[in-house]
Amino acid sequence: MRPGRGSRPRTRQRPAHDDAITGLVVAVDRGRYRCLVRQSRRRQVAVTAMRARELGRKGVVVGDTVGLVGDVSGEPDALARVVRVEPRTSVLRRTADDTDDVERVIVANAEQLVIVTALADPEPRTGMIDRCLVAARDAGMDALLCLTKADLADPAGLLEIYGPLGVPHVVTRRGEDPAALRGLLEDRMSVLVGHSGVGKSTLVNELVPRADRAVGHVNAVTGRGRHTSSSALALELPDGGWIIDTPGVRSFGLAHIPPEELIFGFPDLAEGSTACPPQCSHLDERCALDAWVADGHSSPQRLESFRKLLTNRDETADQ
Image (cartoon, rainbow, N blue to C red):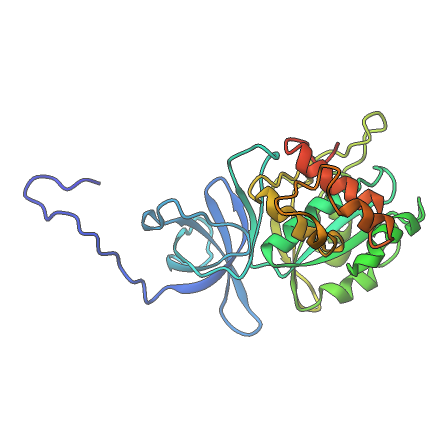
C-alpha cells in the first residue's frame, strides 16, 4: 500500500528473513504453493503458502527449495509466505511451440529427465524423444528413456535408434512391477515427461502406491491420450528419491534454444558437423552430415529429425 501523508516513505530495503525455514515445493495450484517442511528426521509437514510481494515476478515452480515465514504449522486454513527461492541447480524449460516467445519453466532442481514413451497405444513418436533429449541437454540433466507397454510391441526398433547414443533405457510392461525403473530413480529427483496416454500416471501409482493418480485412456480414433494430470506434482519414493509427474504434453517447443545450438542436442551428429564448411546451415548440399550418416556414424532418422527442427521451428512434437 502507498504511504499516506504524514507516514514514513517506503524504503527499498527488504527484510532479510533470517528466521525463514526451508521447504520443498511439491505442488502449485492457482497461486498457492504446497511445501514440505521437515520437522525431524522422520516427520515432515505440508505447508500451504503464497508468494510474498518482495519476490516480484520471480516464479516459483515444483522442485524449488524456498524460504518460508508466517504460519508454517500446516494446520487447516494456515497460510505461510514464500519469501526466498534458493539458487536452482537445473531448470527444465519448454515453449508452447517453436515460435512462442514465452518460455515456461516446468520444474526446478531435477537431476534426471525420464522420457516416457509407449511402444503402442499411442504409437511412439521419435520427434518427441529427440526434443526431450535436446531439452535435457539444455537443462544440464541426465536423460533416461522409459519404454512402456512392451507387452503390446517390441522395443527393438526404438532401441536400434537410441541404443548407439548411450542413452540409458528401461522397458516396462503393464501388470509387471517396474523394479528396474525403481532402481534407476532411487536417491535422485527425476521428472517424468511424455505424451498423454503413454502411462506416466500408471507408473507413478506403481512406484508410489499412495499417489492415486488418475489414469486415462487413449482415443481409438485420434490415437491421443486424455490429460489426466492437470499440474506437476512431486512425490517422495518409498526407497528414497523423488519423482515429479507432469501433465501429458502434445507439444514440446524449443524456441528458447537458438537454432545454432540444436546440433549439440544430437551428439551423434555434432561430431560430424565439424567437417561442415563455415556458417553451414546443415540444410544444403555442402553439409557434411549426409556423408557422416552414410558412413554409419548415425541413423537417417536422426538426421531427418534434426533437420526437421531447423526447417520447421513451429512444428509441434506430436506431428
